[in-house]
Image (tube, rainbow, N blue to C red; front, side):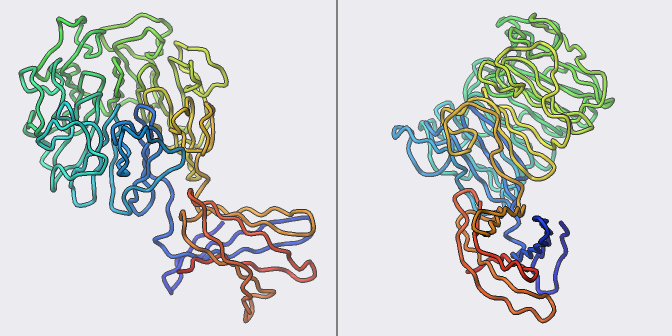
Amino acid sequence: MKDSRASDGQIKLSVIVFLTVVVWLVLLQVSPCDAQPVTKIAAGAHYSMLIKGGGSLWVMGYDNYGQLGDGLYWNSYHWTNRPEQIVASNVTAIAAGNWHSLFLKSDGSLWATGAGYSGQLGDGTYSGSTNRPKQVVASNVTAIAVGNNHSMFLKSDGSLWTMGHNYYGQLGDGNSSNTNWPEKIVASNVTAIAAGSNHSLFLKSDGSLWGMGCNSDGQLGDGTSGYGNQTNRPKQIVAGGVTAIATGPGAAHSLFLRSDGSLWAMGYNEQGQLGDGTYISTNRPEQIVASNVTAIAAGTLFSLFLKIDGSLWAMGYNYNGELGDGTYNNTNRPEKIVPCGVTAIAAGASHSLFLKTDGSLWGLGPNGYGELGDGLSTNRSVQILAPYNQISGQLLSGSKMRLSFVGVAGKNYALDRTFTLSAPAWLPQATNPADTVGVLVFTNTPNFAPNNFWRIRSVP
């Protein structure tokens, strides 16, 4: 497949499909705004979020408190098992929690939806919930993180802000009172944030790792543990050399990477989620993998990571198949799940998501509320969305040819045919809309005598 920018502003993709002795050449013409691969993913408690090219925001799964942001109320027991578009463009970052969600737009504004009874939406209320996104901060927000019932964000000046539940000191403001407005915790030099069940982590520009909040199982990694050892002020855990951090809603364990590519873990380990070969919690960081780790994600009771070769690894709780190893058995050692080609990972309460280099989106684990977005409610390992702009040809009975293409959900596409590309005479064949997840199928009878040149194009 070759991708080139035409002078008329259209993207043209050419695919040659060999079927028996006949060569079929398919030309695809769509406008640049149609190119919508999945670019970012987030997994919460029984729901998922994703961003497509162009910045559109899509959601699927459970919606008991309005966390999907689609305008339906929690008391309708709403959920969706197909990706549903919430925002049409300009979304740049997403964070999924237990019952609330955050996202950023390209203008640096922060938006929130879902449960707000602890003030985690930061909108100045404890009103319960909202089922439509509301703007919380107008500009200059650069990063977001969501815990069980608290939220964190960074501004462009490197300042750290928090809001929401604070019983364990997870907001880091020196007390244990909830707040429904964003509070500035650190004035500058913060570069990354992560929010857990009731604890928070952040990195500074010098590579130091800091934590605050609940330390029941040693998740802060400061050498202590137990509910009496929580802290309501940021505490330095590692002096330098840390490049990435991960924890998640429901998680009482923490992961981080160092500049040498090593993976470290601390905290709760009853299901083997630390990957150290035991089921014993630890209150000090311990090295799990020595090198070549590039990305990390922490679910409630399991962990995921990527290596430099694009391989996906997992450890911990696996009752619902969230590890994707073909079993339902827990493991306390890292297992290779996918050998190569994985580019991004997300860990929810009990399901996993990942992206591959071909642009496809995959899900693992429980699907009772449609969080995998495959149109079903069956726990499994499944490809959710096919690679964008992937054209496939299939020869059917009766000499018919089926052309499949992944486009924009609900958009109309036309199929044309010509017998030559020298002064082509395009003949309209059919016009179909892509389905709710963007899959488009045309079925027509080709002429076996000459070559057939087919064109799929977007239409108003």
